[in-house]
Picture 1 (cartoon, rainbow, N blue to C red):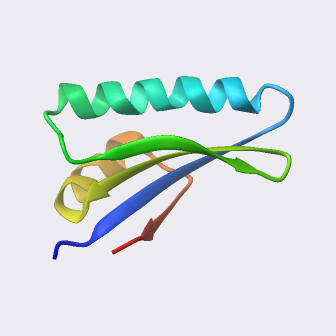
Picture 2: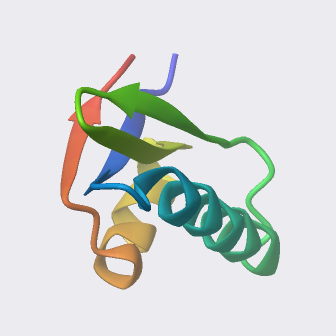
Length: 77
């Protein structure tokens, strides 16, 4: 099975939920514009903020990393 990579962007403060939701909109647009159909993108709550994330297959993640510039990335499978 192909590995998957989770790109992560953390947002903190009173506006963090709105910013994370808006960021996910742009992540989904990126995937649609680049014909990526096997992805997951959503938000998760953090202590004091929210995290937007995007999970891609490793070959797609390698290409997307330079353009999306995530704050961090982890292999999930």
